[in-house]
Image (cartoon, rainbow, N blue to C red; front, top):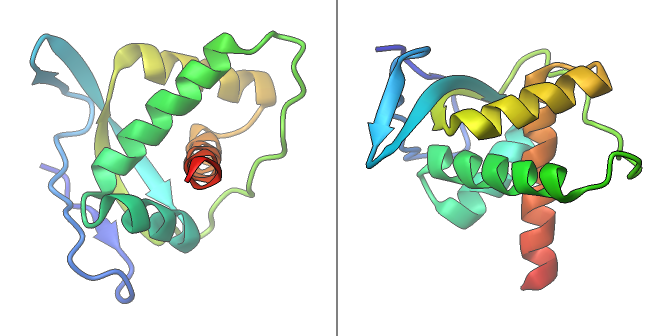
Length: 135
């Protein structure tokens, strides 16, 4: 089992019990793939502010939301700028994500010529901005 890497400090009590990277994880009838996710401190704070210590659940929700948003957009829709690649992530963990979500994210990362990690950080910001806007 891979161990999450967390820079020491600020967000105490995080629930980080990730599955093995690369091995399918069964949840009911849906098989999910462990995906290594690295978040910056602010993105991690955004997730923790809504999901508490269960960072993985927040990342899953953000990835699913952003994936649906990608599939509903026209190909010609303008794309917003992405955050820079993280040099030293605040937290890294394996998160089980549905294969079709991973596929859409990887496809979008290829179109934008960016790393999937950058796209996941962006997905977190987009998701939580939408949640805040709706509150």
